[in-house]
Image (cartoon, rainbow, N blue to C red; front, side, top):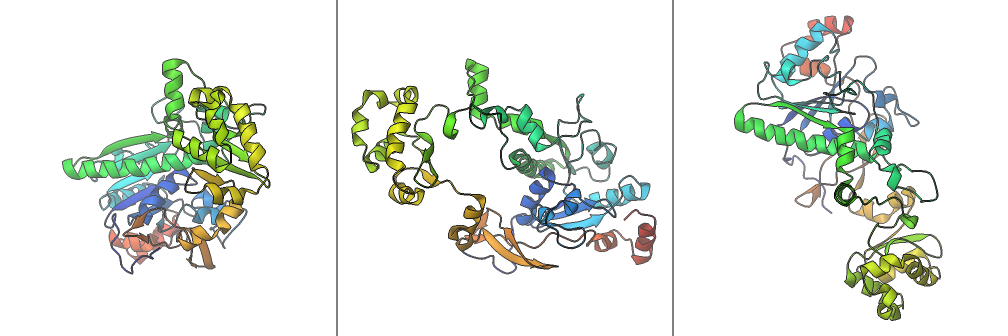
Length: 401
């Protein structure tokens, strides 16, 4: 696995994005852009900054935390009170230098904070304004606060997750935040491309709820067109493919996904169960679905005899299979460190171990640097728009920066 070349030109170099963001979805999306080379200027409230800076339990000095770092690598930070008239003037000046303005404010706040195209288009007609909110900006819930877990509840995720005999279960990770942030990043790039072609930007919206509903994918189509509700299945099983689920081993579980007939055939042979290939109960996918319990009983009578690692070594490369690991086991494994997915970078408090971007460029991981201290770049950015130290001191005294 190659390392980033010193001074390598990243694909989004030259792109400037102003982002009024906090916590999860917005910062996750802009970090993705920053790792690809965009200059992301994080605009934060003076004094307090992004609430994630104070999200524990693990802190890195004043106004910094491991939680904050996980969403804010490679960015710059500017403190600015957007509710002050002077703050709005500075924002307008900065917009003249930017390609996009993103925010994940509550749906009724973007216009009040001067972050929409109506407020910013005059300063730069090509500016792209991307809004991430819980429920959108144009409906009766625009003013409602909202978070990932609520979307998992409302969009049906929890109803299809967990054991059928137990209560609904949320994902262990905030996946709605992450996919919404990724959609925001994609939307920003699409908007910028369009604006470069036409000279005109505009408003673009992605809501957490819409993103969550979009992720319901084929089960949604099954229900909307055939009235088919998938519900929950034991052992995290696929709703229609068998065997595609958790399989018990002697010391834990593996996950097997025999999505194609060839994989089912290989699985049976590798487990010494070739005779099941002639069993009419398991002759094809509908038959295996109808007789799931009997088939899994046959499989687990074999897999329970040896550890999970053994079965991964037997099936790996032949059948889609993975050992079910704890988060600690996943992060302590050799592979993510050997291939550069985990790296150690410099931080103001000392070495910081971080996750790399999943994107590689010419075989190399993209470079990372620690998330910025609160307001670290404020004065440099003010200087760009003609505000010197004396005026900056006055703005600080007034609480504007």
